[in-house]
Image (cartoon, rainbow, N blue to C red; front, side):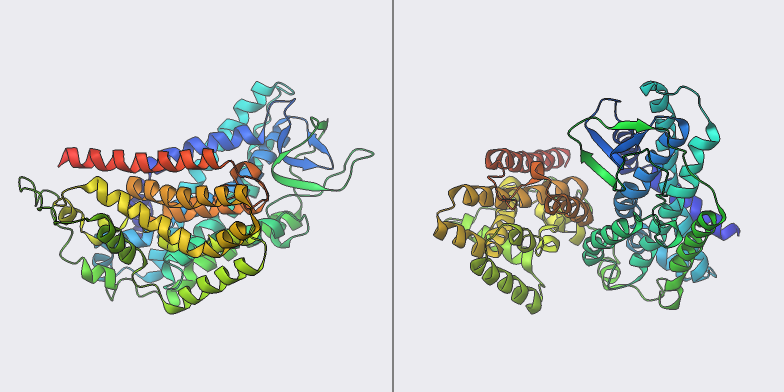
Length: 493
């Protein structure tokens, strides 16, 4: 038990020192504001038969807990899923492998640490719910039990399940990399849709059936929605406690624990160093190794084409044949069918390659070597151009069809998307040094796009112009952020 709590607390303390943790706490406050909008708002995250509940403690607690169960499971997964990989990168894993610590105890410690991180966000969300109930003013009678129980029985089991799945993905070789990051959005999407049913196994997300006012429809919507007219209110009874619901929530938590411990059957607990760990056994090159040396002499003749070709080879290195065959098949399909939603599928295919932009120097330990390059900004622009070239190559079929049909507006939106996606990857990669940040952000953006969020149509996939000037400007902003970050790093050398 001492070893379990030691792993849990040490891992939790390390995570809460990161800037990303503070951003997640701030985002929890933002979720509360979305869940409990002003009384006359046209936006809502929960619509029950065309109504919403009056802002009592029971309803405010329930709607904010449901919002947390829906959205913190999506974003929280990406926040906590680096625990095992960090032990492997830092060499802590090899020390643990030499200790008598048992694998189930190690995995249980990671589960508890993940749960503590996600639960702390739930605490912030609960405090936000209390403040918003008083601020909205429909009911100033505070019932702490009615307000807090939904966070314990609705949100917490879902977050424990998310923490457990993060452990499972990290401890499974096929899922620990970028494929797992992209796959999670689909796992989450299926679970969120199926879990919204009041009759889902184990209580689903936690949305229970309620008695509706006369004339109300039976449709229930959970998610950020716009309504034409402000919703009418009714007295929502809050969370209803019965044996079936309580048993389902405890069963869901028990299943989550079993999922986290399941990798004990195959997880090697760092007994065998991973290839990446072997390559970095001597540690990264000292940052100041090239300090004071003159930059390398420029090569005579035009360097831009060679630099672009080199960056493109680096970007796509190691890509298997089946990936190129899949990209070719999608390009041919884009020639034969109207682009539209098909373009969204075409441009989710290279997401793992784009996520390398801005991250490979830090990941490979080559940052110090690149410090001797005479023009780091030129190299960075070439890296972004390689990402644009990848977008052009994979989306060439859609562009050719739009050019042939004379769809100038669609072609402009396509061009803006080809500029924006690599710029987003480069900016996030340069700022964080981690590919999973772009993998998560782009997958969420893509999910919102295919769900007809027209304001986020960065490629014109929804059948309108997609506002190309806006996305081109955002692309320029992303590249500017990457250049600024690179200049700041160079100034510190």
